[in-house]
Image (cartoon, rainbow, N blue to C red):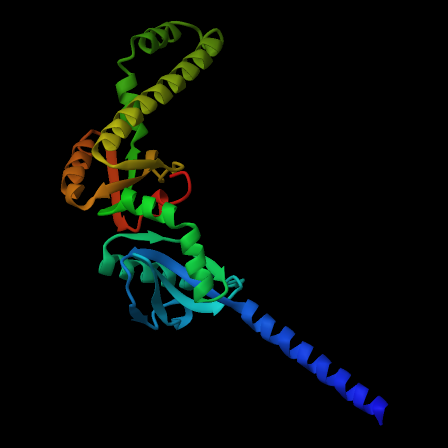
Length: 278
């Protein structure tokens, strides 16, 4: 009888341990997905507008609030690119709604998840509170825009026709026999290529300085050529809301240059200007 009682106690203890472990695992599975941080201590319900129609709401801490939805503490993973695109679009739509409502937001990248519950989120904000406040100081009343500048290289080639050194070499080659002119032809091709690169850099630097002096901050991205034109600048710019028309006028002046075209898009949440080291 005593042995059966001990076995029952052991079974009960084992069941209790299993239940505690299960409960702990359930707690560990909880997560908070963060879309962005906004200014103000606010309790806002954005409805079921999040990823996979998740209910989006704010969690306040001091004088800021996180726009979030509750989730499991695991990444959003899918091998289906269309599903991932849908998730990213849903993420951006929530950030856009928050930006429209609050004006200034600190956007977080897709799939930013804090492990734990509301308490864990508040602890995360408290730990990073000073940086959050500094970022708001930098971006308050400002938004991000994209500026891409393209140039038709044929226009630059025409301008290089006036290069005295290249012109003289062309004349010299024209008077030589085909075989004898080969090495000189190669030299002229390299000279023309270098002159083209130098001219493009000169133009790029000129436009960059104009844009930099007309904006609050600039980040440079990798150039991506179009089919018939060469991209010489790919920029993210941070602009005050009241300066957008003045900046647009500056781009119009650049766009008037022969062979140049400007692509201007936005506004966006200032993703490029809120990361560490920005």
